Image 1 (tube, helix red, strand yellow):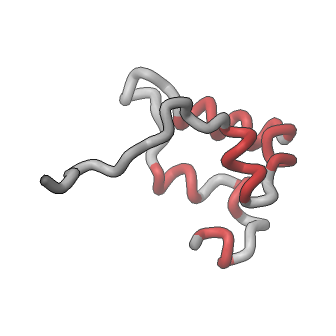
Image 2 (image 1 turned 180 degrees about the vertical axis):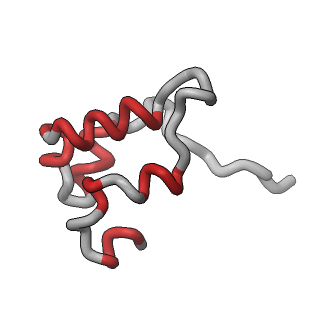
Length: 69
């Protein structure tokens, strides 16, 4: 019998671990990135920023195109 869903680790990775693998732990210290996370994680969908809106924020202007891959 094949599995339909991939296996995930029992303990989810901390955001610091995920960003460290990409070399972006410093992003957590930026108020602009923290504000973006706050807007993305709003419980009420009416208050949550869309992906299109998020990509127009200044935090993405300085990233090289390779960062989007």
